[in-house]
Length: 429
Ligand SMILES: [Zn+2]
Image (cartoon, rainbow, N blue to C red; front, side, top):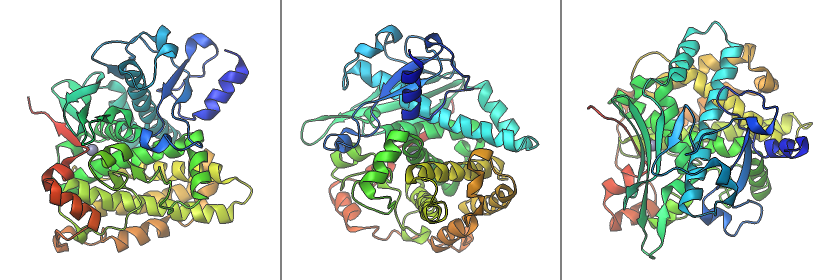
């Protein structure tokens, strides 16, 4: 591979591999391919490729597999991946592996950068070392793992961890494969990542700790979009740099094809929401939307301020930097927050402390964003969404969240809707 091609491909995809080593020859790296967004997004959208290429300076075994994750259900040969045809089982395996790998790499890089910046932070080191050990073995990924199921999940059993993706026939007779959605793969991989940084969270019965797990999945999907050069550029061009634009906002809109197949209005969930804790049920997916919405809005405020403050940078660069800065803050807070079952307010309070810490000493690449009012952005959002209110004073109410959700519930059981994408289980045997 010529150095020019290598450079271009790297520019297409900034995500770096596990323990990122610098590749020096073709033998040390691989060009992977994946669906950057659901087909319902890319089908009629010329600014977004249906298939994206991504150079990763890492070599994978047939499967694909490496020490961290492995596709199960029949291997594909790495020497043949260029010949795979999109929307066939072989390509779907490659895509699912790629999206999971890039998501895991994104968070590994975040941990790595935080450890470099805060070498004395023992909680960060301990979490990173635990993850590196892969105590439950290799992540087993089944792209077609759940026949006739409208779901996908991450689970941890005795010495095993797996991601399973469902497929089913929708009302029009089309087969929907949840693995084909990068949003869903990134969401499930987010569960795997968090479970290897704070394993006790997965065992918690606290709805807000469970909600944090779900929010981390959706924030992984958002961050996956922002971290990818091609998608970040397309997003800016399609929304005119307005992260609150509703049209073409494929970053905020999650699991589009899946949501449409369920009769929902274009997506399963939107991160650009305004929910307060008291506006919905005390259920992990609903409360997660409160946290994800706060994170998204704080990020949008930071991005808007950054475009006004740092006019020497273009919008794509700023969007990626703001997302990286926010990602650093969130992961640092989650890894170092006390307790085994934190409420949102515990995460919020720890986040404010981390913001202060980063205002003195932020990871070098994005340190110029220290001067933004991060604490104000997050405090404003957490306050208005009632996250700051003590949990025992909250009265959850099963109010109408919106007309569309209500319409969907009239034709489908409530439980089915609310438990979709996804479950994170700890198996007891
Ligand atoms: Zn989930």
